[in-house]
Length: 258
Ligand SMILES: NC(=O)CC[C@H](N)C(=O)O
Image 1: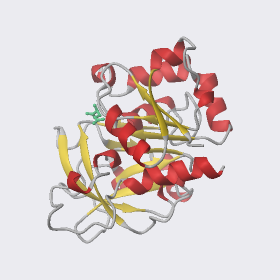
Image 2: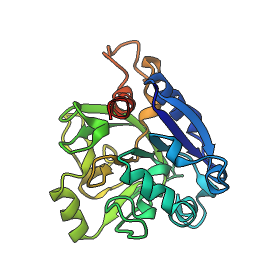
Image 3: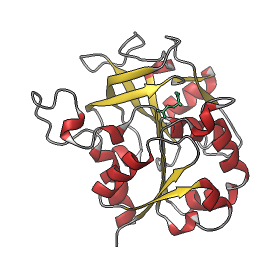
């Protein structure tokens, strides 16, 4: 049976249909679920194997991008979320979804309410919307299995994407192999230099997972490269597969085989 994927949305979410398309193409049985449906019991996280928090401007980025939705998740939905993770299920937060996961505390420490990092305003002081190179690091992340060491091209589209934390947390996540993606230059080497690093993220971090490898957050948008023609150079470059697909397929396969 196809794994069920909960694509969470709320006011201001704008990448939900693309994320649904990506998971459906990978073999998921997807539903767009408004956060209020989870709050009022109309939908239950327990009925799903994968949850995706898509990109966008939830609640207009008021207070801080992703902040209001993170408070809803960490307060009203904390029991459902804890159970979901304890049951060995998967969560991916893309862009605004990554911001949400970090502000709940689920990333990097896996503890609701224990907020150890942030995504702050890009060093450039402006919204960055373009393609970047990413190096996939060695980690225990379920979503990037088999992709370690490869260079991917994804799009970024964010104003608050600079991953920032204190030295201790940085060492912790580096030591535990929780860094999943880094911004890279044309040769594939991680870089702090603008524009290859679009926001000034510490250690060029573009995405991290929790200690279990089952909760992933990343600023770039894998769902925006699941068809060959999504890439601006699709007529010239031969891709064996659009670079975003592997992430969604890995997740669906993991849920299928569990
Ligand atoms: N595409 C997105 O998810 C954008 C995230 C957020 N609104 C930002 O600008 O940082």
